[in-house]
Image (cartoon, rainbow, N blue to C red; front, side, top):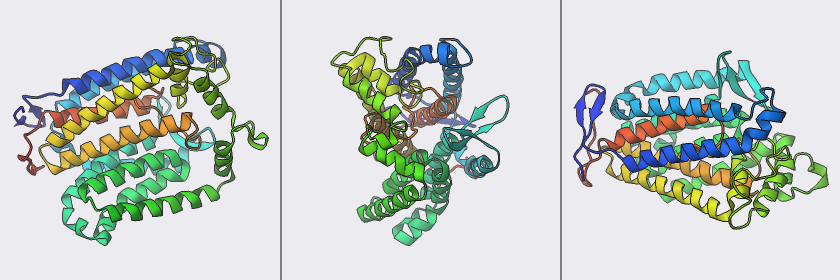
Length: 385
């Protein structure tokens, strides 16, 4: 095992760097560009105002390149230095989330975006990273509180409030954020009965949340039967996603040869891009994509196990939970295993905000990898250094 990185201001020069993780991230991103072009060429040329087959892939490429540069810069920084800014990041994220209620832009019936003129973004994507950093910080700084359920709940109160704000307009992203907090919480204090209580409360919250709005109940009707005539229009996306999967076969129709993306499957380059992958690359392609993600998660776990302190290990736990759960949730929605809801496929679905902050997360993970230490040598690092 390589030695821990040497401290030098905010930057670290480590004798180890997890190149396999970097290679996997770049590979998935490039694969995503190929699939976005395949999925969006018709949409951009005929159904979008831009009337260009490359409009979406160009934007994704630009965001990806900026994200890779940011990822590299952050990977050279000491992640302990970032911890100093935890409360500043938390406050700014809260302000952005609240701003959505007053000046947010509507998209697909929900008010989730902030439009600054030169750029629009979803604050909820920023919140995912904020929750990883804050949860790791608070469960490290207040570890003594975790000896009781009441103390644990008080410690997790601020993250849970943020999750509730996000879930109010975007249940799917709220679920992802909740899983991040619970994962870091559980790793910090691995007590199964805590998790059972959280799961029960979470299920009750979802039931009440769904009952409060008719359109959410419709999604469950579509999930139960996408061919139900009463919700025929609402089930359009789910039906065509299932058509794409059903006609894929072992090797698929071939890259670029899918038919559901040709106007039938709404916005196939976004949340439903996994359906395009299934239709064009078949079962073999789907399995290959899943295997690549599993290898990436395994590498991230390797970094978590070698993190030099509790804070770094908890950050990695949050990152693993984020990518792993969002991957599973996206595939479950596309296959109608879960009700249709907007969750992107990490690194692959079109979306500048999502891709940029995923790259930033990976930069922090690679920063932790530079300070990997042998098992048993983990220590707490003074963030004031």
